[in-house]
Each structure stands twice: as structure tokens, then as C-alpha cells.
Length: 322
Image (cartoon, rainbow, N blue to C red; front, side, top):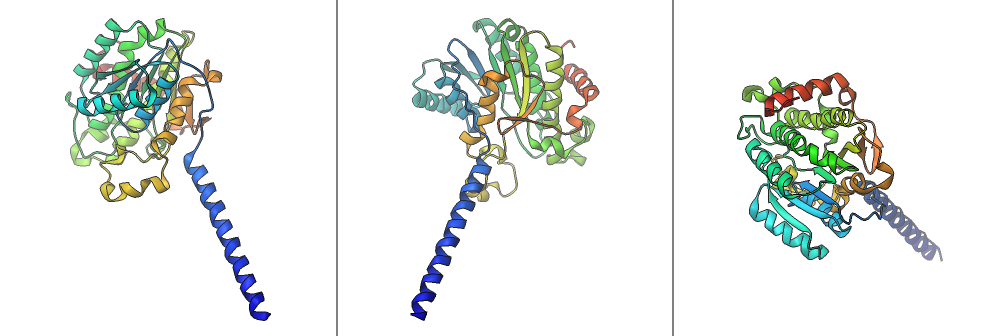
């Protein structure tokens, strides 16, 4: 009887431990997954542009918005990968309103050609999702000579948005969404001189500055668009298992295990989607989101004077009037 009692106690302990482990895993998965977009809003008759829509959260966002009835323009740099993404989005949604257009954000000429095409052929732009980006790459320059991360993540989107702005305003109510990152907290100010010099180059600092720029740009643009019916918000999608980290040391080895700890692309796309469709956000502008909720950005990202200075500097760099 004593042995039987011990066996029962051991089994109960094992069962209890397994139960705790299962609950822990479930809680971790829910925490990792983050927020969910719960809106059922339709987008029939609306036109959406998504940069970097050939992979990751950009493609998952395209699938969701196409399923809601939107005309979705996939703005992609790589033609071959863009065509594969286009075929996949159409297959998954059955939509005949998904199109592919060429856009290389590391080339101001490409940005201008894309904007010219859109302004000529598209009657409206209801949602512009500036999603594309590059993260922690080695020192490289855009075709116009700018540091690659700042040039692609910020300057390319800054020019694109400004060139499409009049059409967006005529399409109001409309939304502009800029994908930033928690990495914006890794720096305290925009100092382009610090990242344009190859000798003192820091991949992390350059990425952080580009993500801080995304938020400051959103802040200043939202101020300039007050009363137009166009909202501008930025967001942190979370840590997502995508190819964005391909330049990170050891990425090839670590990539197969990222899904255990990071969000899936579908999970990472939820805040994109929330900011694009949630009805209660119709008049919400100048905010920063994470996990489908407004959160507070860093002190540096709330600096209105820094936002104005960045706008002036960016306008000069890309050659547009302020």
C-alpha cells in the first residue's frame, strides 16, 4: 500500500507539472502573439498601397485587406519575388483587385516614377501603408548616396508620401501608416552625420535613427494634415519571424527557430491591419501603436521641434519644397 501511495503521489506531481507547463506555454504563446485586429470593416471601393508587400507582414496585410474588398497595390522592389507574392495573394483571396507595381525605395528616381504612375492611373488612395524596410545591414548607400537604412526606411517613404499627398487628401477620409519599431528607443536624436560616415558606422544606431525618423515624420505630417480628413500614425509590429533580420549575424542559423520566440508574419501584421481598418481610429492621428493599442513612444519621438527639423532636412535631401 505504501508503494502504491508513492506511485499515486508521483503521478499526481507529474500531471500537475505537465499542467503548469502547458499553461506556461499557452500564456507565452499568447504574449508572443500580441494584439489582434477585431474589426470586421469592409474596404470595398477603397484603394490601398503597401510598400514591401512581397513578404512578411506586408504580404499578410495585403491578404487581409484584399479579403475585405480593397484594391491592393503591392509596391515591391524585386520583380520576381513581387510576382510570386502577387500570385500567392490572389490565390489566397480570390481577389481580382490585387496588382503589382515596381518601387525601389533606395532610389529617388524609382520613387518618383512610381508616384507619377499612381497619380496618373489611380483615381484614389485611401490607405498608404509605408511598410518596407531594411534592418541592420552593413554600411551601404542608396543610389542617391544616402546611408541605406535611413535612405530606404525614411527618405524613400518621406518622398513617396509627399508625392502622393494631394491625391490622398482628395480621397479623404484616408490613412497614412508608417511602420516603425521599438528600436527607435535605442537612440536619443536624429544625427545623420553620425551614421553617414563609414568609419564610425553602427548598424544598430543607423537602424534606430531610421525608426525614430518614421515616428517623427508621422508626428509632423499629422500636424500638417489637421482638418484634412487624413490621419497619420506609426507603429511597432513586434518581433516577427521574417527575412527582415537577414543581415543580423547568425541569422541563417537562427532563422528556423525564430518562430518559437517571435510572432508569425500573420501575428505581426495585426497592428498594421488594425491601424488601417479599425473604425474607432477614424479621427485618431499622430499616435504610436503596438499590439493594436496606443502606447507611448520615447521622449525623443515626442519632440515636436525635432520633428520639424527632420522634415526640413528631409525635404532638402530629397529635393522637394517644404
